[in-house]
Length: 243
Image (cartoon, rainbow, N blue to C red; front, side, top):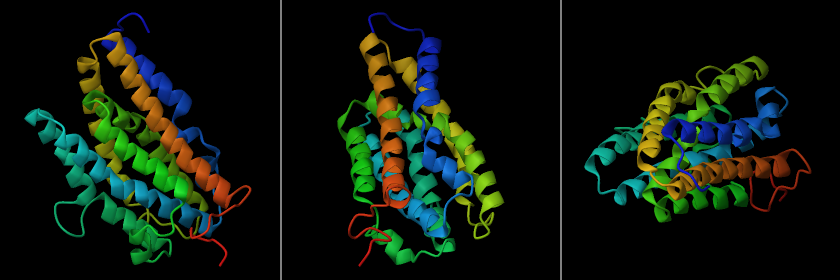
């Protein structure tokens, strides 16, 4: 990239990344939403996704710890409240644990993260490290996958309710709040990067951050597909592994 894009052109490039790379295009999601998975495979998805959910507040706290702008911190801390809750028993992580319990997984087992895939741990930890170590602009930009999440949430909820008799609206309550939270957060982050990416190099870094985030979400689904769909190689110690 040798020339500076306008904010509108930068946004168009970011949306093009999502159209090509967002994990709604992954075959595992087609199976999940289409009712093609057995219950144990849905459990494996929910269990591994918990590790992502529970590390999001750590990622956001790492971003805030590096931020000298109190206005940005005030906006960003709402994400911590959204996931951790304002009191015990509240927040997105608690709602995700309700989902895993409704699917028949033991709460303590889920919280221990003992059964997650190694690739899940590596991918999510890489995300936390990225936000902690890269520029603040890149850290904010890595959250921009939320631009694309409302569509996949709607598809997921409708598909799972239609296709799995072990799923109820209460099981999927986590996603209700995200339909409002994700667009709010995405709008703020998009506006931030459009205003703060002021050189071609910064704009390329913003695009690269979104590519990185899409890749790590895709990698998590690759691992699930490899372990629980085809060829079905579950790593030792992971959920569903042979004794």
